[in-house]
Length: 128
Image (cartoon, rainbow, N blue to C red; front, side, top):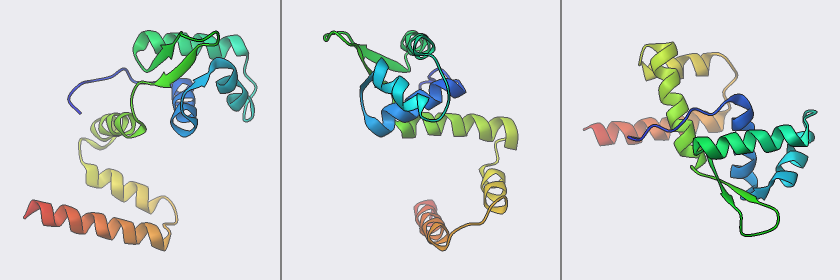
């Protein structure tokens, strides 16, 4: 990804996750989903969405009475940017260190191992 987008905060990532999973939503709908897991005020949700709009993380459709918010980027774009930053900052730019740490820190399911093998095979084929 060439263009740098603003790094979302933890609270902004929670809202983006809702938009990625559920699609465009009103403030009320987003707030209701957020409130299932933690206590938060409606005005707090609204304020975060307003800041996210200013930062370019979401867009707002104002054509209806209740404004509808859309994620400006796909989940993969944001994940890739955050991962690139993490690899640079915490692992000195070495992706293999990140992968080794991730795999050694928890139990890996057989399906995940198979998916990783396929990915490694694909990467190896592309590099030849």
